[in-house]
Length: 157
Image (tube, rainbow, N blue to C red):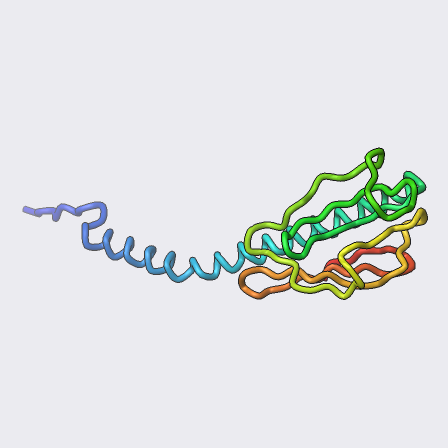
C-alpha cells in the first residue's frame, strides 16, 4: 500500500518576513537617489518655465510691434515681463503686464551675466545684450538660460 505525502502550498511566515525585509532595505537605499532626481527634475522645469517666459516676452514684442521688458528679482526668485508701448522702459498703467512667476522652493537665481536684472526685447525680437542667468537647486546642480544679443534667441543648458 502506498502513502502519498501531502504537499503544503504557500509561504511560511519566515519567508514572508525575509521578503519584506529585503524590499524595505531596497526602498531605504533608493530614497536619496529619488530625492536627487526630484530636485533635478524641478530645476529643469523651472529653467524651462523661465526660458518660456523670456520667449513669450520676445514674441509679444514682435507681435505687438513694441518693446517688451523682462525683469527678474534675484532676491525674491520672481520674474515677469511687460509690453512697453511707449518705449520708456518703465511700466505705465496702460501697458500690459504678465503674471509674476516664482521659482520653486529650493531653487534660486545663482548668478547672471547681464548688466542688470532687466532685458529689453525690441520690435524685431532682438536684444542689445547677450548674457546668461543661472538657476541652482538645493543639491547645487545648475541650469543656465542663455540669451543671445542681436537675435534675442533663448537657450537652456
